[in-house]
Image (cartoon, rainbow, N blue to C red; front, side, top):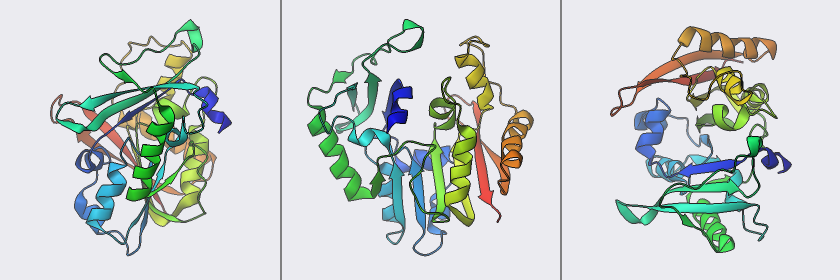
Length: 266
C-alpha cells in the first residue's frame, strides 16, 4: 500500500458497538432490520473490531467486513511506524487506544508525538499477530487504505466510516474524497446506505492543511454549505445518491455534529 506514505499517523480507538452506532446515527434495531445475510462494511475497525463483533452478536447471519490498513503494520518487521498504546483504566484487559506514528518527520519539520502516558510497543510483530488473530475471530478484515476498496461491485448493504474523510482522505498531497465517494457508490447494492461521521465541509480541513486557515479556526456546523459540498461532488461524478444528514448531539459536551447519509438510488 504505497499510499500509506502520505499518512503521518493512524490513531485507533476502541469504541464499543453502542458508541459506534450512535456516531453513525444508527440503532441496534436498524442492524436487526437489515436483509437476511446482509454484508456490512466498517472502514477503519478500531483496535478490537468491536463493530464487527457486536453486529455478529445481534445478527449471526450478517457478514461484517473491516477495512484496516494498520492491521499488518509491523507484521513483517519493517517498522516504518512506531506504535504506542494505552490500557483502558476501566478494563485492564483492553486497550483504550493505539497510535501509529511515522518515524520520519512530517510536513513543516514537525514530528508527531505520542500521547501522554502511552507505552511503546517493542515487539510489533507480536502486536500485529494478536490484532490479526482477533480480527479474523470477529469478522473479515482486509488490509487496505481508502479510497481504494478491494470489494466487488454492488456487494455491500451498509457502510459506516467514523472519522475517515476529514482526516485521511483530504490531505495536502492527495485530496481524494471524490474517489472515495465513487468507490462507495460502486460497492453499495441498490438501496444500500453509507453513513459517514463527521460530515463537515471537508474543504475547510484542506484549507487548514494548505495554510489558508488558521489551525485553531472553528469548523462551523452548517448543513446547507456541507450539503452543497457533497452534492457538487455527486453531480460531477454522476453518483445517484439520496443525500441526507442526521444531527447527533454529544451527551457530555452537548455539541452537535452531522452524520452524512448516502443511499444508493440506482
